Image (cartoon, rainbow over all chains, first blue to last red; front, side):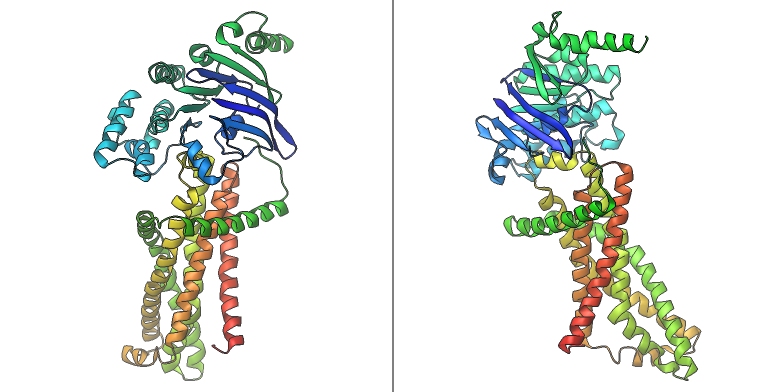
Length: 249
Length: 258
């Protein structure tokens, strides 16, 4: 389980996270929604130890990542896979090499096993016909599919998604959504997705958290969040309407 | 992500901090882990290919320039036969170190900054960290160690090119024959001063490549900032080349080795 307790993070005078608390349950998809620039990516990067928080604890299976030594941090990180915005594929490697890279670098298996695993995950994301393609030759959606395969190949317990559909056309968004859903259903991974895409949220979320003013202000099951009167519902459905009306539209 | 607005002075202070931090990190990971031999090999080939053309063209022009200046002054005193001696002495001992260092850091070093900076910008460095691969180990160490091998080699080759261009110019313009040139060109060159020029070159390679990597590594922002960081890396490296050269000159003079 991932447990975030009293997390604070500032950049200069900009206080981004203020006493943020959340518990991510295992084997379900939790979606953190919130406006752009509210600190969703900061939360995700803090969880995997890429950004040190100013204050607070982040427990991953009971181990505090904020106090972990370098060796322990590596151990904890090996449980986490992450899909970065735009995929973060390595420019100088082709699709196959990108997916194989962590296994090759850590010399985890022999060449044949690595090949089998890479092809297995590329088939899972339906990218098996693009093994030789370079990242710049791929569309946004394809890059994210390859990035998901790369994140999955180390068989992490937790998979974090940073805005998985942002900037994609509706077709590619749908493909990525389906892929996340399928992985969730077939492999029962604990997924944490940060997004402001309400359609993606509705499609894949088991639980939804609303990040506002540096903290989680609502944390509900998807069913509850869709009910009228729910804070999440009002923020993402009726608020949009209110803002339009306030601007005279 | 969130960025702070900072003054230019603060920017330079941050660059200095980034460089010092990378030096510490470099030695920490160098001593801690195995040598990344495969990556060093790849970077050696890459840096040789990238640096070769620029440094050789620079060396050719450098040879012409030194020979031209030395030749015009020496010919006034009828000392044409010494033009080759003066030119090669200056090239081998001093200018080829400076030229190779400056051209290498401008061509290859800034390439490191842009490459690592764009990896930072697109989250590739974070992706490496999440794969429990330390970027200093995987990216910085191979580039720096490869540069320490590459730059002295390129300097050696560039010395050869500069001598050829010198020889050709003083033959055509000042009428000094090849045998006379060959007879006197290396008369005052000592093995110790040549060795020291290669030590200086290796030090320049170490510092400039590490600076370039450091600035790329701790860069934060978009395309405009990446441009500024690359310029900063170039300026810092040129100053480093001059400081290393000056330090050696002073040290040699004070210790009497000069």
